Length: 21
Image 1 (cartoon, rainbow, N blue to C red):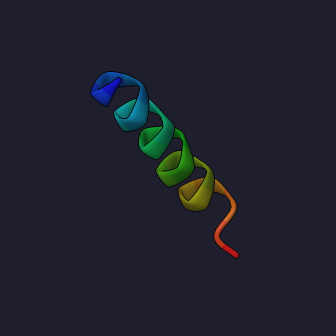
Image 2: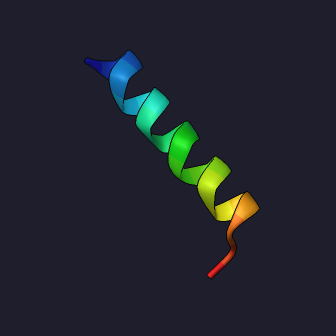
């Protein structure tokens, strides 16, 4: 569960890095 959460956060971070809103 923790791993999945971490992955989700990572994706969110990546998206924000590429598309900072």
